[in-house]
Length: 430
Image 1 (cartoon, rainbow, N blue to C red):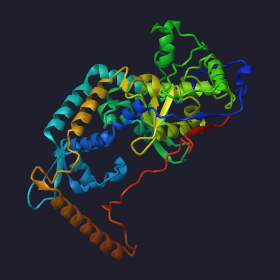
Image 2: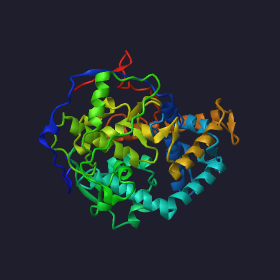
Image 3: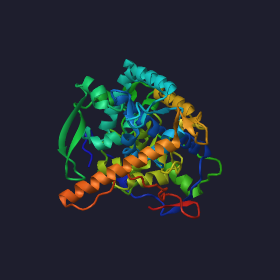
Image 4: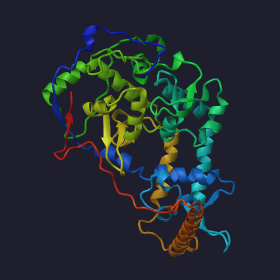
């Protein structure tokens, strides 16, 4: 449950349930926003591997070591195939005949990384990142979140991969890492907390727009409507349009206030839920994130299934794309025909990584940097067998039975995505 320094009390009549029973909203794909998601396929994995390599003193790592990261980076193929696919980003070499094959960044990718670091270390961007992270923590009301939740949003918030030492340690007046019991798991966990509430930051993007950036003009409970944008072919039934019109006119409750006292099934509570979701997505550099991240955060904040309902009920504000083996929530107003309206500097760098990735040929090259695919495959296979033999020998000694190889590479398949029904519609449950 959220705990906030502020609470908004509204008239009792605003806590009534919604004004219509149920309807079916036709789910219509948005090709522009689907393209936004699709063109970043494997980008997060490329950057994650890049950060692993850069963190190594030699700026390279054995292929066998990187193969262990497949489940953590959600790869749909083997690490070996992944590096061959993006040979314009990664270079494969063997330091000496007696050493295993290694992976390092290709020269152009290394140059991009150095440019990226200059942006990350610039003071204006650091200050912006700190403020967005502070606002992210303030959405929790209690001013803190478990590190495992923060890590889920690390990439989308544009945090450095080593943000605790590279960023947070330079802002002790803002952040602190502490240990406490996780209310969901009941286990001890590390939390990132905001040292003190920042009133100057507790103003949402929607409130800024209405106040014309003069925060003295922000009025609590003002009637603020969200921008609506529907794809071609989308049409709401009249009774839904009428409800949306009335719903938009309800008082706006800041996402930085606590409104859990409202009837969770009422229209006003749903508008506050949408407000929290809108502000969350606006804080992200790409104005989108995986749906699973949103739902995990919602569970921790105490929203339960209210985030899921809000995403379904308001397709003019949010879009859920089913591309790249997952579901991605996109803030519609942030894009115009597939292009970000306000491009964060880090997004400019990520687009350059995408261009570099796209230079790789569709067909896997037989040889990269003098190392053939078959040579690498044989060595990885040999390494796997050696690990398996050692594991079995050790397990027999300890009488613990046999164990699977750390290098076992199981092919993945697309999971069943929830959302659209067979008839292309989504059911609105009221």
